[in-house]
Amino acid sequence: MPQNLELKVRVKSHRRFLTCLKNNNIPFVSQLNQKDIYFTYDRGLLKLRIENGKYSLIKYKRNESGKRWSKYQILNLVGVDPYDYLKDILRTESVVEKKRLLYIYKNTRIHLDKVKRLGYFIELETVLTGNKKEATQEFNFIVELLKLRDEEELRCSYKNLIDSLYDTD
Image (cartoon, rainbow, N blue to C red):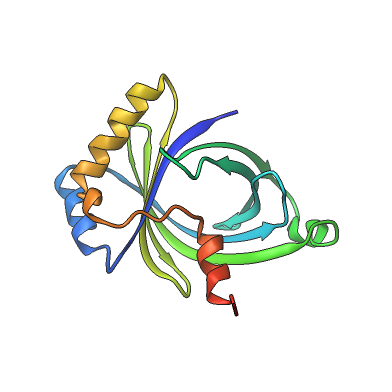
């Protein structure tokens, strides 16, 4: 199962990060309009991602303590909207909508996210392609380049943040 190392931080805006990425010639790949529909799943997280009109079913399990390594699987779906099928067999828990600017440095995806109802975030995902030491070095390089050590790390998914908006306890 593929793995990646993750970091998520809330920021006030993307302005300084956009400047840093441009000044360091880190290529912009695309803008992604994403809607993630989370389903009840007792062994991690399961979501249907609708991204620029394409559908993927993603399941993942994240280590919430220590370094944030995640194991994930992606099933790309084609054809009609699979939500009509899935909603009859799975319980929907949350919906997260975001606009994502995607930059890539080697094996690290740099996401500048604007999440509906939550605000601005930076998310890093370094995909493990060799060994964990090399992946960690690349990840740490980007963290230092973007000066993310000064930001408060969020150790949860956007799903958890959206759910907390509706928590009445």
